[in-house]
Image 1 (tube, rainbow, N blue to C red):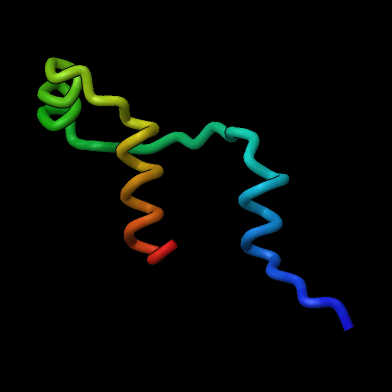
Image 2 (image 1 turned 90 degrees about the vertical axis):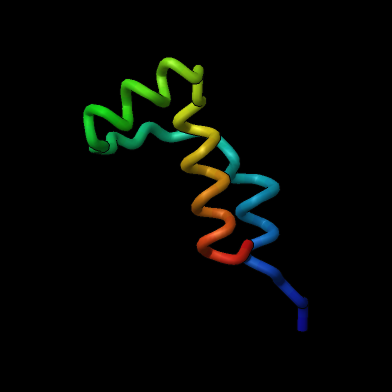
Length: 53
């Protein structure tokens, strides 16, 4: 029997980026853009934290 961690495999070999469209409030977008917030990075970090990965 072989031990296999599918999550670790996915993290290592399936790490290409995909495009996602989101909708946020206009005022929030304006402030975030003024602060040069990287939306992709914020979303990735939030998902990792939310999913406890």
